[in-house]
Amino acid sequence: MPQTPEQLAADWDRSHISHIFPSDVRHADLKKYLDELKKIGVKVDEVGESFGGREIYQVEWGRGPLKVFMWSQMHGDEPTATSALIDMFAFLQNNRSLDWVKRIEKAVTIRAVPMLNPDGSELFQRRSIQGIDINRDAVNLATPEARLLKRLRAEWQPAIGFNLHNQNSLTSVGRARKQATISFLVVYGDAAKTSSPGHERSMRLASAMTQALQKFIPGHIARYADEWSPTAFGDNFSAWGTPAILIETGGHYGKDEMFLIRLNFVAYLTAFNALATGSEANQDPNVYRMLPENGSGILVDFVFRNAMIASRGGQAGGTVDISAVTQRRRAGFPKPVVILSVGSLGGRRGLEEYDASGFYVVQRFSSVKAEELAEFSFYKRSRSIDWSAADLETRFPPDAIFSFGRWIKGAGVVPRK
Ligand SMILES: [Zn+2]
Image 1 (cartoon, helix red, strand yellow):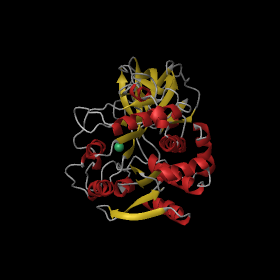
Image 2: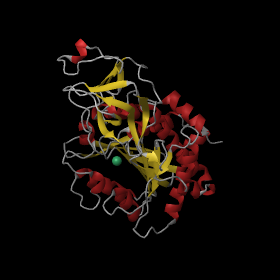
Image 3: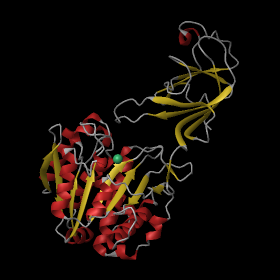
Image 4: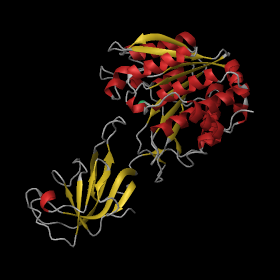
């Protein structure tokens, strides 16, 4: 029997060799992971070089007739899948004695390029070091990374492609107040959305992965809009004959990046299981088709409702709602939180919401307005404060302080809604 999703998750728990958060993985760390893979006998080849002179590698495993090509981190600040690929190869190689792994080994050959954009990864930025979005460079081919990706596909002619990314952690499932933790897109090969057997199979695989992941993140799976992007790699892979599945990993409130690696690991092995057993043929493509589309403009990280803003120069105005969003940074770095709106929330909802009625709020270094940092002091309204006082926080210690997305003083004083 193939593994259940729960068993696959337990397999990851037991076996994963990635032990640092993906956003903290540098090119040097990737090389260490690849050395570990080489030591256990996995084929790893240097296949090219980035514009900045960093090596790009391809990993290969399996000896079956069905060719599957995967690539990750063509956007440098989208790291989850790189670690998930490493863990997948380590697991497959170390468990070849298991019947279900043997079956995958005989059915498929997997090639994967983890971290296609090592320069962008080093800078933790989306674009390449040339300032080019590699995923929009499939036609111009102005970057060595895009030329390499195109060549690896053309030389090998894989039957299926996996294009692995991260999306904004505030992407929602449709209009719901739910993060899209995983979003799929089975990419058409033309603007007319012409179906093909490969495209149909990829839809069934996306259905299999969706069903597996629903066990861990029910209701947190969505689908990307499938409009044709003429310069994007996924679309062109499909056009060139390798129907591509886009997997976008988002966020999941209260869970860290390792949880997201685990979801990816379960998804990939579910797909390979389905291909190896042939069970993909029985999947209902409508599971994928019926997923709600990705939504934006719904979720923010923080909302403070009914706050009365006090300004340093003088007295407070009326009460307002404030929303704020966390900036994307590596796991090891403090993440600044920036004010998105003051006043109407415009329908936005917070992953964390606080009821600030009964409090004054002061921006600790400047003023409460959009684009300033959400560095807030809270004072009970019953207190008498001289807002013009120099060194306000010393003369009038706040009841609570919110800084870098955490309560550094008075946790729980401002009630969570
Ligand atoms: Zn991306």
